[in-house]
Length: 288
Image: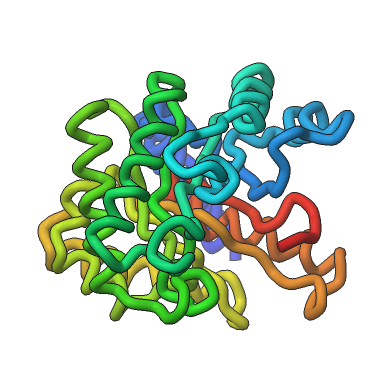
């Protein structure tokens, strides 16, 4: 019996030595990123909101730049509300994550751009807003959930999305190669839509691929979705490009506040494990 105790002690002592050696040689220089972000629906923050976001540790704020709100007189742009938004983000150390999106009644019958004229008009709007705020570290996203009929009016059309996105990215990158441009911001990890986007050459032009890993499954199921997407990106020659979780949350109609608190932690843990550098929680407030 005494011999067994000695052997057991030696075994644990050996394990301790091995662990000590592992710790001594481990590389702890890699910083854990600051990926936390939220989606908002205001240009002028209510009193106290920016302080709350700052105290929460939010590093990114995702917000639409509605085409129709900026070009509400044809050929003229009014950025006044977005001037306030951008200035507040920068004041509080938050990176603006701006979606260039949606339609304008002056072009293509108020539908998602489907003609050369409509695409050129959208491109001009996109270039105008990037020109105004260039050099501020903003993340520019080309459209929002174009794989859904409700956003790509009147019906999703991946060919038309690719034509528009390629034109816009080329225009921005030609003028401002240092600006960060991402997309396509699909609802879910829509592999069929994403593959068509990659076939169009957009994968090579974007700085990162943004997706919205929504679903009724537990957050951990996103692990497999990210793995599948990574394999597809490898197939099209970009295995190392970043994937962004540009929008993700769990509906209040289906989950209590306590459940949401648990799910947000699991969601961000999954994203951290899969090296997703930005995680945008939807939504800062119940909203759209």
